[in-house]
Structure formats: structure tokens, C-alpha cells
Amino acid sequence: MSNHQKALLIIDMINNFDFNMGHVLAEKTKQITTKILALKQLAFKEKWPIIYINDHYGIWKADIQAVIKKCENERSRPILEKIAPSSHDYFLIKPKHSAFYGTALETLLNELGVQEIILTGIAGNICVLFTANDAYMREFNLIVPKDCIASNNNRDNDYALTMMKNVLLANITTAKDIMNENQT
Image 1 (cartoon, rainbow, N blue to C red):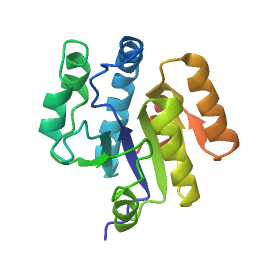
Image 2 (cartoon, rainbow, N blue to C red):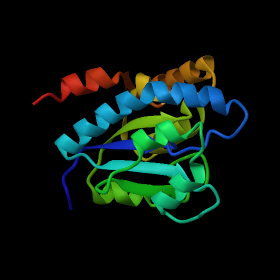
Image 3 (tube, rainbow, N blue to C red):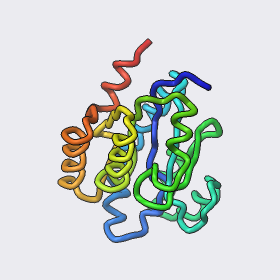
Image 4 (cartoon, helix red, strand yellow):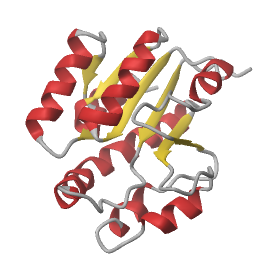
């Protein structure tokens, strides 16, 4: 068993943005992608597990290339090209909003010795919030870089951050602060 304390979760960033308000979320996602990638570089350097967890888009296989192909369109392509998982990253599919519901995520985190989860991705007010809730109930410590989550609506995103801080006791921070705290 590895002895990792932290893991980086990247939630639903492989996305087709083909839904009501998808164009808005795609623009907001472009803004957070660079900071998520900076955290991903830090996680790789620190040997923290990097775990992508994503909607399955009807494929029902943890086949990242198939999910990317299904999601690829003019709106999503610039994001997908930047954020696609590397060969050393974990990739899980999920059937519903929470990354824990109906997945092997809890087992994987326990196997890897993870105690603290850095949550990133979209949508902050849905899948990130539901994942944070389930992580909290499983007694994981939560770190949420507010510049690495996005929702269709800024007010909803801010509300989700407030809930994660006040109810789920998440450390609401920034990607830069996480990187500064982990300089070696």
C-alpha cells in the first residue's frame, strides 16, 4: 500500500458541454483548466494520486479514449486537449452526481492511504458539492481550491463553496496557496 496523504480529484472535466447553459460552463471551465493543470503537476511531483472521475456518457466503460471521443465537439475540444488524463492517472466513471456513489472511489482512496482530498472540476454546485458531501461523511479532509471549480452560475458556485466550508468543514483556498504550501 502506498502512503499518500493527499489525492487530487478532477471531476467531470471530460465533458461535451452540450446542454442548457453548456456554453457558459465551457467558458468558465476554460478559466479553471490552467490552475487544475498546475495542481496536477504538483500532485505528480509530490506523488499524490491523480484521480479523474467522470460521467460515463452512456458508454458505461472506464475507457477514457471512448469518453473523450464521445464528448469531443467544437466547444469541448480546446478543453479536452489540455485536460485529458495522462497514462499515470486513475480514471473512474460515475453513474450520478457524487464521485462516491456507485464507484470504487472509496476503496481506491483507502487502498492508496489517502486522508485528504483536493476537489476540482465541474459543476461546483452539483457534482463537486455532492462529492464533497460524500467525502465528508466518509471522514476525508477536504481542500477545495475555489479557482479550480466552476458552475453555470456564479451565485450557485459561491453558495456551494459556502456550504463546503461551513457544513463540510472544507479548507477553501486557491491553487496558488496549495502550491505555496507544498514547495519543497
